[in-house]
Structure formats: C-alpha cells, structure tokens
Length: 197
Image 1: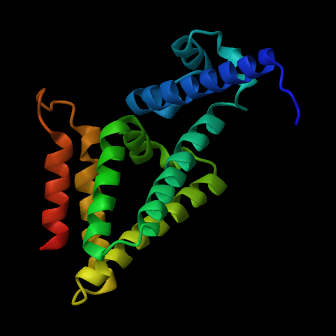
Image 2 (image 1 turned 90 degrees about the horizontal axis):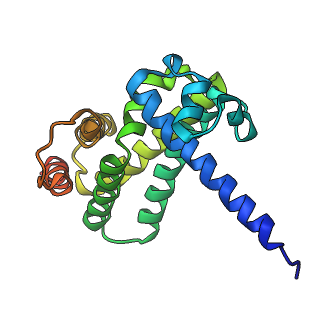
C-alpha cells in the first residue's frame, strides 16, 4: 500500500476546494451577467485570487462553462439512473424522479439560468454532449410515464415532460418567493398533478 504524504493530501484537497469555488462563482456570475460579460479577473476576484490564477485549474472561461453544463447534465443522468435502478412501481419511480428534480431545481438555480442563457456559448462538441444527455434524460422520464399513460403517444409524452421541466425549472427565474414558502412541496405536488392525471 502506497503512503500518501499528509501535505500532498492537504494540497490536493485545497486545490479541489478552490476548483469548486471557481465553478460555483462562475455559475453565479455567468448566470447574472452573461458569460461574455465576465472576465478572468472577475472570476479571480470572486474566488479571492488574481485573475491568471484561474489557469492553474482550468484552460480558460470556456472550460469552466463546459464543466458546469456538461457536469450538471451528467449529474441529472446519474440521478435518473439511480432512481430507475431502484426498480419500484412506475408511480413510485415517477414520484422519486419528481423529488430528485425538484431538489436539483431548488438548489441549482444559477446553473439552470446559465443553461437557459449560455448553452450556445459552449464549443460544438460540449454543446452536442449536453444536448445528447438532455435527450436521454427526457427519454428516461418518458419511458416511466408511458407505463402510467399508455393511451398517450410518445410525442405527446415528450411535450408533457418538457412542460413539466419548464414548471420545475421555473425556480431559476423566481426570486420573489416569500420566506417560509414550501417551494419543494408546491412544485412536487404540481408536477405530480400534471403527470398523474
């Protein structure tokens, strides 16, 4: 067994934390100002370092944007696959998917806004990867829904699911929610009402 020096472990942990801070701050800044309006210096200042320090962690702004948007699509697919792997009845699976997506929508508002506004700013290969993952995610939901609504066509179910994603992802554009409002419950109940009736 190889012994990893404590200093190296600490350094790699700190590097990972700084990298994640870049991703979090970039998502916030890109979502609020737009990808092209945020400079390397803006990103450095948000993280508490000089602008060029970014290049120790990323090749540049496009690499950060790519990691955020491809990464979120991969996390959504992983959540879908984990829920499907539980092999519950279709209704329970659908409710589990709703809960999963609501948690995402409430906790990753900046990333949703960023995806809405800046997907076209990705390099072609990463843009294609995101769109492929998005289609697979949608198709996974549609397959669950088909078992519950066999009378509906594939095309109808896709339109229905896209509408529900719009509902759930509306959290990204709603900054005026009153304190104490149970956003998760409201969204989960609304999505279930649309999909299960």
